[in-house]
Image (cartoon, rainbow, N blue to C red):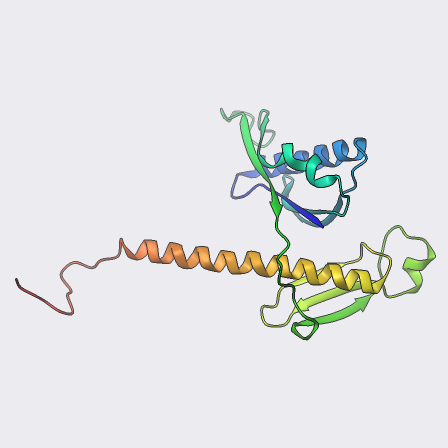
Length: 197
């Protein structure tokens, strides 16, 4: 399985618009090449999207996506701030590793529900969609992309593992930033010990 994330990062609203444009262009070009990507998550904003998570099980997708990985630049006049001098807007397309260690069923609370969307009568008659919550962290995902509940549970486990890995990485990054900030927090004149040499 291949997971791809498109993100506007901390960019302004124009970057969120650029992220939406990137998602649309990527999906159009993938479809034209016969590569199937599925949109798993999309964090909408007023201007576009903050981020999107795509999944592909197509064996050719990994080679096809390589030219997309990295920073994508869009050049346009801001529709939100027409007088703004800046014309270059940047977003990132990143490949997300699927963690080797997946969440186990005893760490996850599964709840089934009816899927919506295309799929015919099967979608309307069975509880094939799965809402999965990682008990310890509270992170959750909803998966309805597969026709069977079993396949949706497997994908939910993998997505929770990815979210958990990202959550842990953010915590490590925050701890590293805190340690870095502490270098600038030396208080002068309030020593708890004084040594003379």
